Length: 96
Image (cartoon, rainbow, N blue to C red; front, top):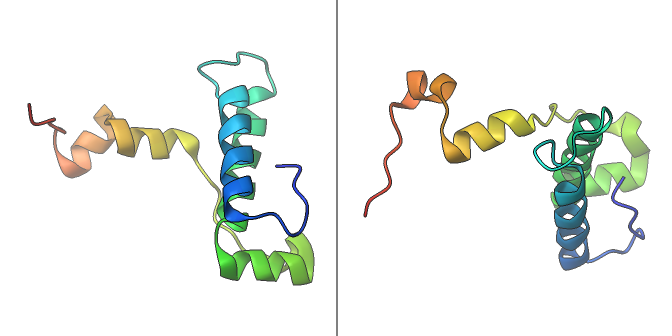
């Protein structure tokens, strides 16, 4: 999904993820397939940015991975706060 060579460096992986995440982010791209592509990009980055998972992927392909589903909505809620998260951790405050 990130369209990288097998020997891609960490920097190349991050750059490809960043560019595709911006392209398919549901807030910026309202096409029907954007959300699904955004999640797939996140899953690909999750595997390739982890040396152990990347080794398993290189050796066994997708069948060798048991990767939890990447949920971009939960990640952004954790980073930026939401009513769902406030129930668990309280209201997030930014010091001024």
